[in-house]
Amino acid sequence: MKKQQPFKTAILAHVREHSSIYIFITVLFLMGVIFGAIVVNSLNFSQKQDLYYYLSRFFGQVSEGEFASGAEMFKQSFLHNIKYVGLMWILGISIIGLPIILILLFLKGVVVGFTVGFLVNQMEMKGFILSFVAVLPQNLLIIPAFIVVGTVAVAFSLKMIRQQFMKRANEQIFQSLTRYAILMVGVSLVLMTASAFEAFASPTLMKGIIEVISNQ
Image (cartoon, rainbow, N blue to C red; front, side, top):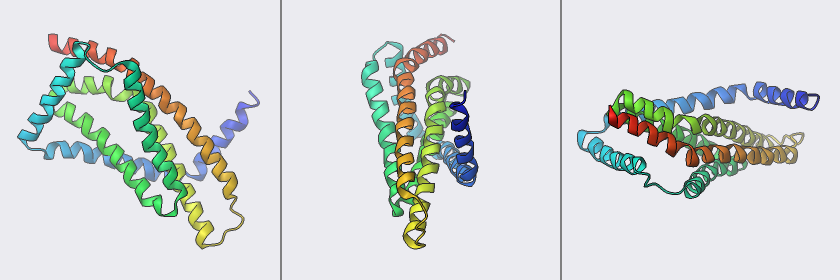
């Protein structure tokens, strides 16, 4: 318990110190989600039909068990997420990477909003239930991980800017870089857990939901 207390204190201090950045990043992500949902409504009928055709084929494959192996899905999911987060992490070290970090977070929100919006738009309540099973569970881990990495990357980038242009010699960059690297390790473990759920649990849940929906 004594070891946990300083850890909790450090987390609370971190959130308080960067609260404004956390709020900005969260709002930016939510704007991306809203924009993604709006984009669905801007698609014409032909585009929606084409997308729904491919989506229906995918659902058919899932219901028949014709999807990639769990190990392959885990590999693809984890590599995709770790590359995305890793790019933000690297951009945080770069002074010129700040605006790109914000763009990447916005685009992540667009993808989530478009996916859920399209399912609901095409399948209504069934689409909402399907997105609740297929999209939400892993994103309960992935989205906070992205927001944390984005916030810390922006904060680190701002610190680098102060160090470079304001000659703030008292900024302990090396110590901050060490903590920054440790954060990436922790986030990698979180993404690994999310990818494992997406690869091994989501297909089974999706198959059950699709069968229930198809029988209605």
